[in-house]
Amino acid sequence: MDQIIILLMFLGIGYSFGTLNESRHYSSIRKREELFSALPAVTTKTVAYPEREIQNAVLVQGNAVISIDYFKRFLAGLRNLFGGNVRSYESLVDRARREATLRMKESAGNADIIVNIRIETSPIGQSANQRSAVGSVEAIAYGTALTYAPDRSSSHSRD
Image (cartoon, rainbow, N blue to C red; front, side, top):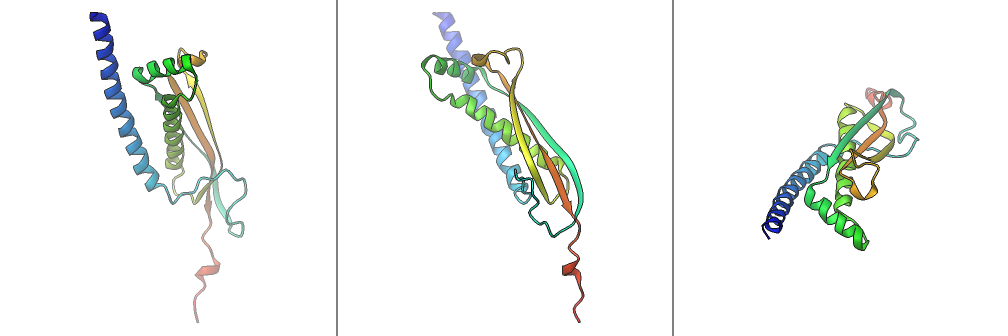
């Protein structure tokens, strides 16, 4: 009986700290997404303003590794028994992708747009080759950051 109480106590502590950590991370993500909302990141290979000369093009990337807490891993194990969506893993992958995209935008400097972005995810760690025991997810986002040359047609002086 004592072992069950200890197990439930650790699950409760894991749930509390995991939920707190996840909500803090989402809060940080939302704030930084607002800061970078003016920098478009698109999957298209074509440039949005083809009439403007490209001054600089550079590969930018960002990656993030996010781990799942023990409580969510326990719930995911139960969900695997019965089938259905595993929401704890969905939030894990969502956080990893959004964080990687933000880090990519942070590395873009003063770019005007990031084109041809790609995002890849993969499980990592000791259990990476076991589908039912994912512990951490790595996401990498990469693309080409373009900086346009100043628009000369709008800089003409008026008579």
